[in-house]
Image (tube, rainbow, N blue to C red):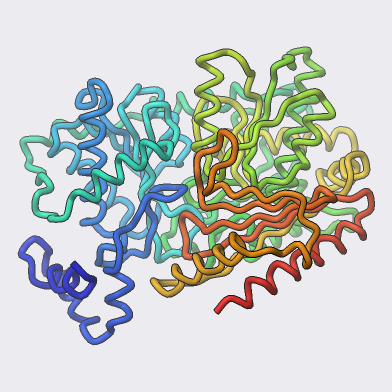
Length: 562
């Protein structure tokens, strides 16, 4: 069935309601819009489903949510023992339709005779992962589009270990979802199944908070400076406000101010186009408040509170955003040094990072005789390694992170955790403050010791069916081309063809003879092609020159693709 036929079916079928049909009839003369909405089904990427909220098979709406949930239900009933009684935990953020999609998910599960646990209100993604593990449920779902613009929503699926499903199992779920061609076969909820939907008590909130608080390394430092150390926090209008304020204040950080315009949940994000903590524009209000208050630290979490960005004062007193690679490197150093100081750094300790994350943290770890393991992009791969190490006891996981501002200190959850990371960053910053140093100064000192590491990411947005096809043409150009005359390439890693023990993925990574590298991959959550560039040198000026040269060459090749 082509996209026009699918569109007509949605307009005519009795299954779809009046509101759906009225919206679709309005686009009857816009074939490009019809194509974009119906040329494919939403697919599971690095973070499950994600799409623009509207009606169509390639959109986030109650129908695609029901379909995804029915596919998930069929999968867990066939593959996870006692799935009906163990149930599925569902959380949601503050986006448009999030509560509605949460309820649709719960009702569809109940219609399949599966227990559904929901929270009374919005909750963070890490708390969803924690609850799945705590309740020993069969699966978890969180309704969120993370840091995407306000017109998006999404549907992330978690396994019994609290991590997102690995590709093998995600593919099995996708097959179940794709087998549902007729929406009318999805079981309908009736009130006699209402008892299968349970609202979780606040006990689970307290259990989560207490677990986070137990992760503090240097309580003595917080006790010493907590009253005076000034923190500005912004949840970017998302889910983190209450839980992060509670955690920070309960451990002893009493001087915490929240950006007032961004404290309360807002599906429009108070005018922030991209509620993404790695974007300077998203932190503008926070920086202004930090200047006004003379804050030591600005912390920002994305709407579902699994990612964290920060800004700190430089030597001139101006607030500078640190990159995900820089934050990850500093946290790696702080954790290792703290464990050394307390005598609990084990010989088999490891950190885990993604293949597109800088070697900054890895080199710090190596200097301290700590192993680094690389995994594909997607925190599920870090979660899978944690699970493996718990089973075979061969390694001691101490920290995992990705350059995209996702970090996990501890093993209480199996996804990025903006709550525990915010607390750890605040503790780390307070610790160095007692030594007369800001995090910016610590970063510069670390660069002097290990070399200057510079990274830059460039995203090319290409929307719709035509955009998707062009993204693949660009990747094919690099995959099949010979660029040895343009750039000094030592090794090409094509993960789609298979690299060592890694799962296959549409990722290319080029290692240069001087140790620099660049990588290319399509985004799993947005219509973007992502380029990653990373260099290091003993001198900052040389590193800048290297980075600019590599970036100019590679982007010019990309621009040549029609």
